[in-house]
Length: 111
Length: 115
Image (cartoon, rainbow over all chains, first blue to last red; front, side):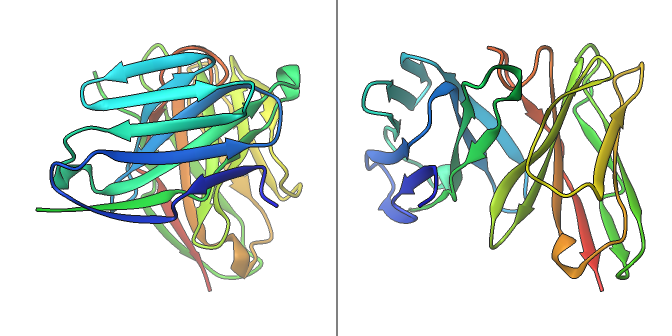
């Protein structure tokens, strides 16, 4: 079983829909990151979370440390949101804590 | 401010050869991290350098190595290339590193094909 699991693997939505992508992890972490990768490979770091909730524009990320779960929400989705969304965690093993990535969620937003 | 640059962007090598990839971070950033991305394994962490010191290392064989220079530019080297090393290699820079609270900025990647 992977240490970081994302769901769903693929998601198709209509423009304007509210979208939720989930990330569950099984290790102790010091931080969780949400990344966005567009076709062609470019990656953008969206959020870094260690607790609570963060919001940036139409994007909201939450984390529940006790349940080892994070969600990324997109409100009023738009075709330009089409991308792969990747959850990554940094283990809490001090300076030796490795970075572990989920397999990604491929989002396609139709106009 | 210029973004993270990686050279070369595309590379074709044959099995057994070695390769060196270069990453220039955003000016002022002291941390550079390297990642390998393949269709089967997804993104995997290779190593992280901060102020010329390797601060963290992923689970890759010793054929994968890296270094960081005093100007924060970083190189990674893969020796004795195998077919499975074909991947997109990404680097990212930040002020304090992935475990910190600042944003990581990714480069466009180097697409390595091993024949």
